[in-house]
Length: 305
Image (cartoon, rainbow, N blue to C red; front, side):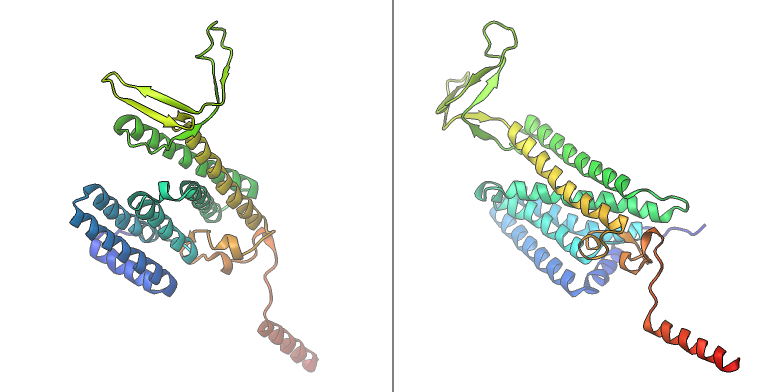
């Protein structure tokens, strides 16, 4: 049994540099984003913002995860997939949290949650597909692969909403953003106690009164505390996961090869999706050189006869 080499940070850094430099596009994207994060970190330290500095350090650590996964799991992440992961981390942590894009740009959170559903589905699909191609005698159907990947992505989305809810209830950081609504229905307002929903509409404003005498006025309606945001996030996660799983299922079934899907399909080292023979038992193609060899062989046999 081969002895596993212990993890060494120096060797990993050298491996990371070699991997990134092997692809110029990946190298440029990684270098630019890392430089921007470091500049943001320096600014946060100079301004005395420990929270922003911690987010920058977290982003730098997350940038290392794709290369760490490749090294430890002996897998290859396509360049496009890896670049999008870097951009997603930067957009979520640096732009979203530190530069307040979540509140400054409408729909920023929705875009990232949709992309998260897509990326998680790609990871889940790849994990099952690698297993499917590694174990002899195992042949999972494309529909099964798509369903497992979809469930994996949705589970990750639900777990993240659990984290947001826990943080909001514990530290009151409002990760589940609030919405101002003008209409709602509630059985709590039913005076008869018969669980009949009382619909309250046309709300133009609400006032919150606290025990210490302070009051807060909400203009334009009633403040919904995170429920709409949570359901919206899960729905767009559903859309992102469904899109990838549809294309992934078609790819495995043989209806679509290479192109879009293969750019987001993690594979075992040395088993590139585009270099594999046609799945589903299709006959391999014959090159022009092979054709010439066959023709030469046939002519020689004819001459000998």
